[in-house]
Length: 219
Figure (cartoon, rainbow, N blue to C red):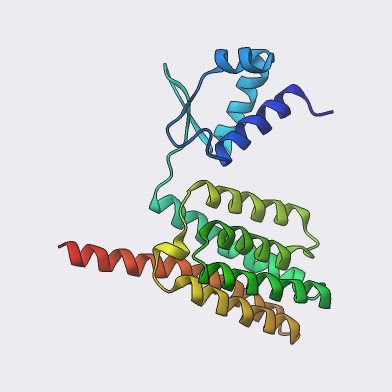
C-alpha cells in the first residue's frame, strides 16, 4: 500500500493535472487535512516533492501555489521533450512489432478524423497516445519515465499548439506517417531519432512564427 506521503502526492498531482487546481491556486494544508483525514506532515512532504518537480511554488507567508506556465516554459519543455523522445523512439524502433505499427497508423488516422471534426480534446489525447506507443518498446525505463514526466508537464501548460499555429495539426499528422514509414522500413536509428526530434521542434517553430506574425500585425 502506498505511503501517506505518496497518497497525498498523487491526490495533489491529479488535481493539478485535471484542472481542479489551476495555475495560481493556493493549496491550504489545513483544508486538505480536514478533507482527507490525513495529518499535515505527509501533505508537506508531497508539496516539497511537487515543488522539486516544478508543479508548485512554495511562497513564504503564502504557502504552496500552483505554478503558472507561460509560452517560454512551454517552449523549454517541448525542446527538452524533443531530445528525450527522439532518443527513446530510436531505442524503441527496432522492437516495435507489426501490430504496434498498425496501431500507430490507426491512431494517426483517428487524429486526422479528430482534426476534421475540430475535436481538440481527442486530437491531443490521441497525439500523446501515438507518441507513447512509439516509445513503448524502449528498454530504458528511466528514459521512458523522463519522457512521460515531460509530456505531463506539457499537458499542464493547457496550451494546444496544434490549434494555436495554423496548419500545424495537419502537418503533424503527415509527419507521423513519415515517422512510421521510417520505422517500418528499418531506417538507421540516428535517422529515426533525428526525425522524431525534428517533429517536436517543428511545433515550436510553427508557434514562434505565428506569434511573430501576430506581433507584426499589432505593431
